[in-house]
Image 1 (cartoon, rainbow, N blue to C red):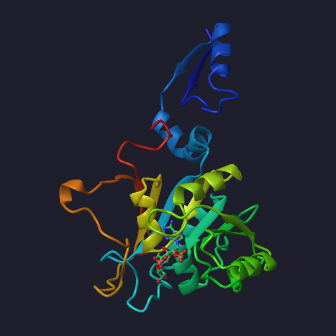
Image 2 (spheres, protein in one colour):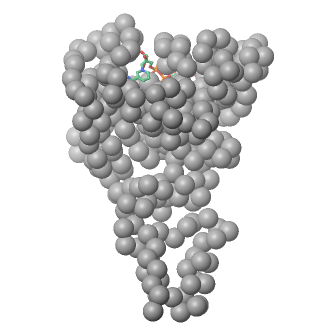
Amino acid sequence: MARVVVGVEDPDPDVAGQGIARLRAHGVDVEVGPGSDEVRRSLGPYLHHRRHGRAFCLVKTAVSLDGRVAAADGSTRWITAGEARADAHGLRADSQAVVVGSGTALADRPALTVRHAAVDRQPLRVLLDARGRVAADGPLFDPDLAATLVVTTDRAPRRAVEAWVAAGAKVETVAPGVDGGVDPRAVLELLGARGVLQAMVEGGPTLHAALLRAGLVDRIVAYVAPTFLGPDGWPALAGPGPATLARARRWHLAAVARLGDDVRLDLEPPDGPPDGDA
Ligand SMILES: NC(=O)c1ccc[n+]([C@@H]2O[C@H](COP(=O)([O-])OP(=O)(O)OC[C@H]3O[C@@H](n4cnc5c(N)ncnc54)[C@H](OP(=O)(O)O)[C@@H]3O)[C@@H](O)[C@H]2O)c1
């Protein structure tokens, strides 16, 4: 008898379970479930998008041994060495959008393009700037490099919006978030509606903290560099942590890799690879 093994059912409402039912109707023995963790891990963004309609949120950060993402003066280039940076470009290449907050855009003037990995199409660059603080110049607004989307609120002055549009960027206005900024869930929904399966967030400590507080982070990749930046460096997360250790959320270490002298930690929510069942 023919036998088919299925890792996970496709949650797309247009197809969900139909293929399996058809196979069974034709006498094929179908087993659903073996290897589902691996399948869910590799298809995480797709499954998440089909179940929730919003983009899967991958947070990437590069930290020192004492958990700092920038030195006291805000400088951050480069905490990690070449191998880790090239690896991070591979993550960008696997994403359809790369997201930063206005703090990172102002401090680093990043290009947010894939440069050290092969890519068919550059991911959409997404700037979250609720108040119109970031000027429409520099590599982020160079349309020859890649497309740019600015997500803002009605607190941004009209001249800032006009300048972004004149520079060739798309602009979307959403509601403000509870912590200030733009509503992070609305951003992931908006990106999902644009067909973004995975949004890679390369923000600073403020944006990462807001996403974690909102429970929107589906995966974290942390590159840990063998250096100390001291107490005046910028901590990985802005804002208050848990009041007591018992309330600290622990992530599951799904993989670890050595990249030169740096280490890459792949972390997923404690319940295993997010597949959108929750
Ligand atoms: N090592 C690393 O991996 C790494 C990566 C990135 C940045 N950095 C460093 O981090 C520093 C910048 O930190 P940062 O915290 O200012 O950067 P950020 O998190 O990228 O930007 C924060 C700003 O983004 C805006 N924003 C819009 N929507 C938001 C939301 N939902 N939640 C939070 N913020 C939102 C807010 O300003 P408005 O309200 O004005 O919009 C907020 O002040 C720089 O020194 C940079 O070099 C390090």
